Image 1 (cartoon, rainbow, N blue to C red):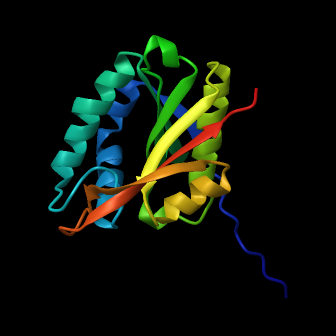
Image 2: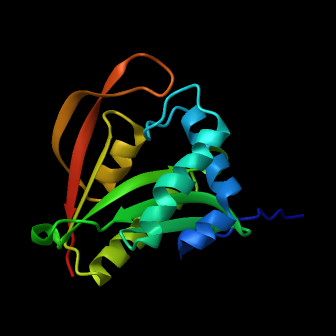
Image 3: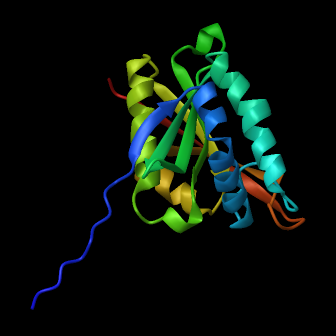
Length: 184
């Protein structure tokens, strides 16, 4: 008798506009809430109720999407949001070749499936399509994300000590600033 193991298919990576994010607001809020409660340093500190997570998407992200200043990528697994990342293209005229990456997150129960890599590949491809040749980001120094970004070819430009509070303590953590030059 031979056994076969089920290999879960990779989630679909899509871009969502402001109305589409609003329609899935509960999924985005739950994901952000779960990531912060799992220790992700993505701008929020405990206590962090799901209502604050929803407010972030509704009050910060959706207006930027509707204004054309940001592109949101989502990983959908069985039509459920399991990951996301954003590309901010709202740069000054002398920086029209650059984009900022922010808020890469994957639901804690969906990690170790390559979802973050798929999201980052989608960001890079769209940035190239838009003529962006430089991507920048920052991440908490020493986090798993820093290793991921290094593996994806991002270079460290520096570390800023005491940059942000940890999500669940009074400790200030450093942030690592990184960049990647894209080849067309």
